[in-house]
Length: 260
Image 1 (tube, helix red, strand yellow):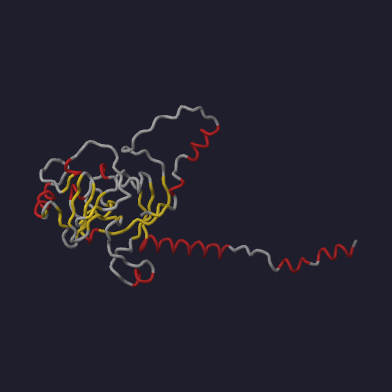
Image 2: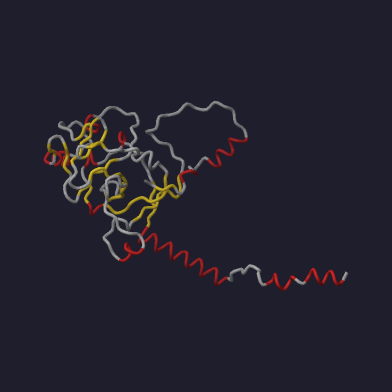
């Protein structure tokens, strides 16, 4: 019996060499500090979180989406952009965050870059004589607005259109097409019938474009005022009702969704 116990106990010293190392308090504190420093660096120089408050970018971005944006991608080229997150020129189709008087930041999609000749017919965008392929564009039901759906308009019909922009638009229209000036960008919301964008207040100067959305890191379930309401579900529920309340406050499938 004693020899059996000895044999069974011999692996003890060998196994002890492979025990997990639990960090000491100073080590744990140093690790936490490194994490905080990296997070502060990212939030200060590279990333910034935003909450989507309106329906103008549905269904790409929904009300209640929390989005991380890349603040470096459109910044002037420097050591940070060269080595960490490379600089890119603004391209047609990009989603951009930019300064705007009210509210202070907006997010829209670029459809016209400097030099483009642009028009909208029946809500569809044509640039330089070619219809844009826009799988992201949504056309939710709304009352017909000739200024919004036929652009550039020849008649001032919508009171929400900025008067100064209307006068500028007339001077930049050639043969029924709006010519985008140098250093300016024409932007639209993906939810075309429910977006106040360049059609209503004009171009976005290059200097005002500050970021590009990267990823949705969380999404709270919020009602949209522009969606067609679905009929209520009359089926009885018991235990599923509680689980729905516990899990239904967020759109879990949208978490870590890359923004395009």
